[in-house]
Length: 226
Ligand SMILES: NC(=O)c1ccc[n+]([C@@H]2O[C@H](COP(=O)([O-])OP(=O)(O)OC[C@H]3O[C@@H](n4cnc5c(N)ncnc54)[C@H](OP(=O)(O)O)[C@@H]3O)[C@@H](O)[C@H]2O)c1
Image (cartoon, rainbow, N blue to C red; front, side, top):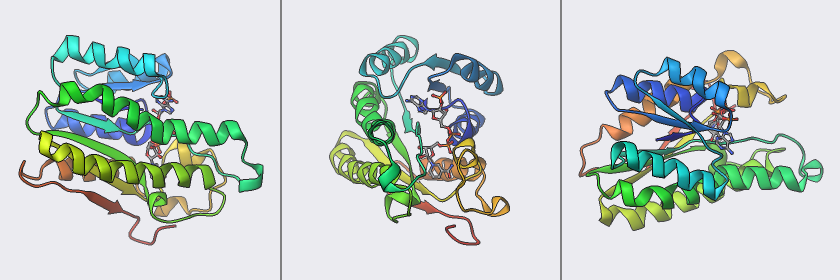
């Protein structure tokens, strides 16, 4: 199950996992984008669900339960990004970052737990950012949400290990997706990571033997973080 699987990094992860033989479910807020993505992923199921809405998230995992009875992997990937100085950041933008990048992990992981417990091993992979450990100007809401998400991921890693659930954080550097393209973010496009690079890191973490947990991967462009 990959939240925000309709484009960008989430879509690349979905394609890579389908290539590994997994049956994939993707979610997002927009039907048309989801349908376009679903057609690119062999055997995928696409479910429209806003990751910040508890009722949507509950329905999403009811569908997963009916269809598959269990869940091997939850990828918390849905995210938004606001790029503007702190003084110009509006409360609704602050809330959108916190709710999409942090609260959605709380909602999806809680809803997924009963299904994850039926798989051995089961995995939760949270797609975070280098902004979970490094402050960037004009990224206050995003940085706060990702620092929080890393803290939550570390707690989950400690609490869920004894339940047979491995938790991994992927701290990705700037990646060539719509999220970056929409803003005047100071990066050189030819130096960006590609979504497939992040997907390859996810697959590598999952390939660790069940007794081993990859806690955190920091993946940055080889030319530098920005
Ligand atoms: N691009 C980067 O440089 C970069 C670097 C490090 C980490 N990341 C992280 O990687 C993740 C994916 O980002 P991306 O770069 O692939 O961005 P993207 O191309 O903008 O894709 C974001 C995905 O999240 C979905 N989404 C957004 N809000 C949602 C919501 N409330 N409920 C459900 N789905 C939602 C979007 O679909 P809808 O809009 O249709 O809902 C879309 O599928 C994010 O967590 C981001 O913070 C990105």
